Length: 265
Image 1: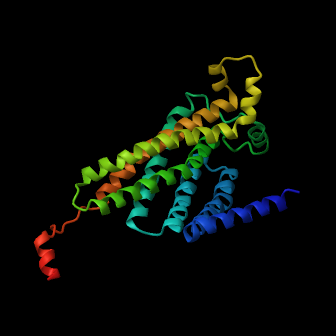
Image 2: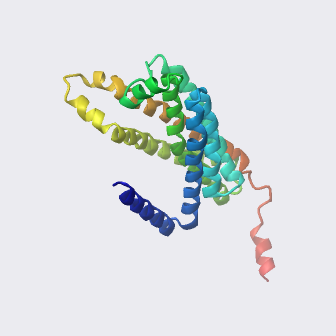
């Protein structure tokens, strides 16, 4: 019986989010629920009906971005900047996945679930389904980095109201480079964890490290990590540039110290 333990774990999760993150955390959960609803009500039925999986994933992913960002962070120019940056990151991810998928041999046929799906629903292209999965899997991390970069730019603009857009961009990119360094290994470790049973089995076979990394399901995880990371890394300067352009410099002239002292007298 998994229902009760999983239900209790979900309740604990809600409580922890509510206590630590309060309203923002609960709104983020609502955004996540809306995103899952889009997957269940639109993405899965559309793919099973024979629609092109990559196009379906693009439409579903675009629709999932809005509730995830706006529910959690509110509607503003700053959050809209994050949405635009996320769209840019998704576009890069799609282009890289489409360009590299076939040369890298990403057929999507590895694993029992894929083979069962091929037998039951022959109209579904497994290679296109794999690429659709790459697109959806990168959405969460993309939202994370774009929101952080947009917030960084607005905070820097508030701290440096007279600074030029270029200076704000350069300062925010110093933060962005640290973010890039952390998210690269975050994605890699997440995929290593999900592929741990396969890695354990592969380690028992007499095969070189390169041979292991380029075989079957492990190669698929390596491909997914690399493609998502490229989209992530390029989304950071894109979001930072948009934010620096929209968070306009102050146009009011600085108030001379003598004026403020006379005002007090």
